[in-house]
Image (cartoon, rainbow, N blue to C red; front, top):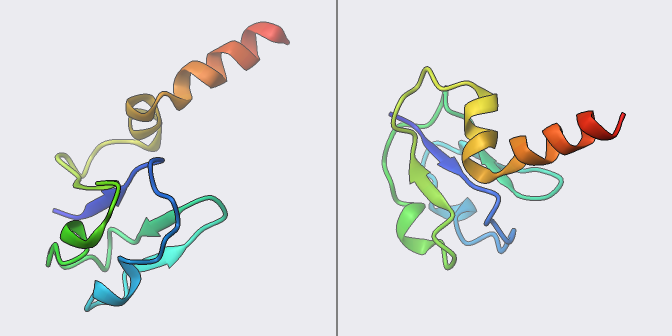
Length: 83
């Protein structure tokens, strides 16, 4: 199972050098983990100062489900209601 980085990520960069497979990349607002190349080493988890890295429990989860877990879905619903 791969790991994911939540919206709690502060882009401190502590995880980047810890990934032996180079699966972590910097995004616009946070770092991201490529689930296809993540080899489940978990070395990034212990260095994250805000505990933003966790194991993806079910690799079949959709992006919408991940966003829902972070509260993003509620924001999308509010935007749709405003339109």
